[in-house]
Image (cartoon, rainbow, N blue to C red; front, side):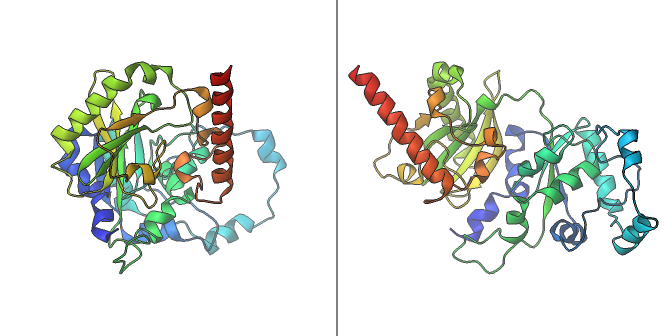
Length: 332
């Protein structure tokens, strides 16, 4: 993989070209001081000092009785704030506030490539929905997955000359409260040909997908041929989409071929097979076919499924058991 292929999948690169076929987004360049703040783990985590007073966790519940029971030695709080003064990013804060307001009051944050979905547990609502700068800072700083963007973006590149891009960007995407996870899909493109489509949320069986499988595949094939094929410059890549109830296809993201992108219900060997001609669409076709992921509080994209890993062994055993059960049913 070349660095150029990785760079093409940055949201600030592809969004302007596909703006009309995606969700409304505001993109802000991050000052290097804020990038350093996200990477820094030398002291206790402190939220940025704010120009406008707001609570990072506005929905948390305070129990005065609990607070009375918590004793702090005299002067310790002042000492801590003196040793680790909160940083301030007033210009970025105001741009974020303006962007949130222009996007309806709630956004979904991500950096050049990744979102802090592994940190959703720390959010007061258990999701990536943010309504303030401090909520965004909390999610970004708490996310381990963003370390890839910040420190290891080009580790898989054969022409790697740097570990990170020169600039980082914060993409604020309009929060979509009504999205249905069963209508999210990952499309795989090899040598500019759509070769496979996978259900993106692989931890759940959705019967509706079995009924609409052919219809949905045709929608995404038409969208790829008419909107993506000639517009996206890379030859091999994956892109995630959402199909609305009206039948419109919206782009969620672009991903590199292989590397940290998961093939979900396929294997990379299957997707790279030369004899693959027609577009194959795969969905979870029974409750026995669900994959590990959110049910374990770990997003599937961050589960270690490498050969020999615990999940690799688990899934191999699960596949063997599923084949055994199907064999018994066939022989009954």
